[in-house]
Length: 206
Image 1 (cartoon, rainbow, N blue to C red):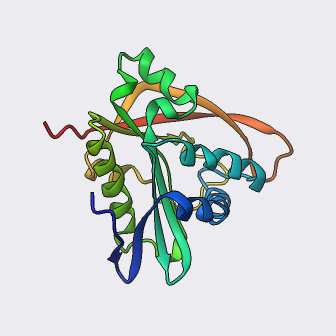
Image 2 (image 1 turned 135 degrees about the vertical axis):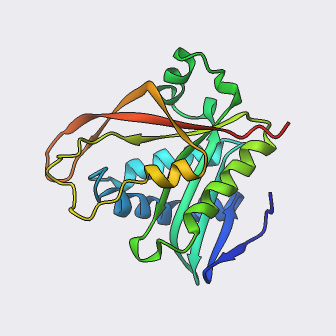
């Protein structure tokens, strides 16, 4: 993978490591809270929790964090790490389905402010993480996404699911491979459990 910055539509795409990664954690935490507050996640985020969660990426030697910058401002970011370095709740459904999690590179999140979408930044995020997985000799890249009913009351009329984008990049939904996660939803006072579905792609170059 090219370890230096690149540009997509005048936005700088840059892998973050070491001290640069540590310094970016507050901005990344803020981005997660902002982007995931919208449908379909409706996440009522907490900065303290976000910082703790993201510090795990600093601890994993195989992790990658890719930032998108408009000047000095971070406007988007994507993360990935070996599956075994994520919480067990992510790996267990794969292991139960017969996958060797030591061969899976798992994408944590891809967040981008709405006004910067449609410029190819999402593709750049996927390519950087897929390349990292290939460098580590992983066979599969995978991620999960929240499952919402089509008639969910908070679903915007102009909402466009990302399924076609993921499919164009070669990812497929894994039927029956799901996990349950809880978070506090906007407008509620307590955590509720959501179903997460997994997507996967073979990235083996051998």
